[in-house]
Image (tube, rainbow, N blue to C red; front, side):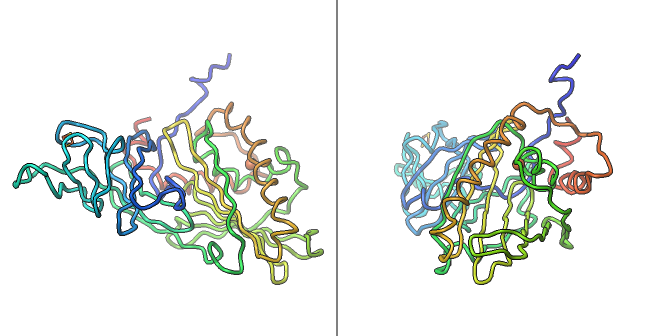
Length: 322
Ligand code: FES
Ligand SMILES: [Fe+2]
């Protein structure tokens, strides 16, 4: 007898940096209600150009700042009675009909950073400040690299399971129909929130046959880049962030760029390969259960290490409570 509830070990939402919007979709003065991590949030861009995220419910009478809220300089103004909240601190900065600002007039502000064409927030189950960082990638926005193409999708999946694909070379063969790849090498950084998997093999590329290296970098759960290196004077880069909407759904954003000399001959194929690749993963993710103690075999070289690595991104309070 197989009951989903009995077979499934629900993972909580991990801590980390997650994209909540494309930078290009958030203009100065834009205000957007967003929903991630099982929480309501308000995202806006101040007049000085900074992206900000606050808890959205006004401490006054509870209006949602994301519906009708308005950017005023570096603050957002509540649609109900005009109280203003500073985007950086979340403190009430102005009440239009009263001099004195009550001490408790504030909303929680979230840590935000913007790089690689996306707006990221730091999520932590216990609201602790950021514990690690991730790099801006030089290829994105570089003049020798193509204008990034993007793709996004909502999936019924958990971010740990979607990320696990990176560490699962066997699935590339069965799900994605790729030729068997030689096992790669894995390198964990000292602080260990980052790791890199490298695979090198001879490959037919649009510019000829070369020893091509596929380097997959991961920063926390859900943030990954894949670089194709070894083609002389050319390269491809895929970058993606997968963000928990709640415990059972994610929003994935992908960005692709390649050196300008490849864009006409391989740009379309690269994009097509990515979108098709995600499509074939979907039925597996949608219908699988998560096993916290999977039965692994000796050939599953990266999987148990990945599971151990992933554990650090969960607060004990939410992980042990499951
Ligand atoms: S509810 Fe926000 S100002 Fe009154
Ligand atoms: Fe996959």
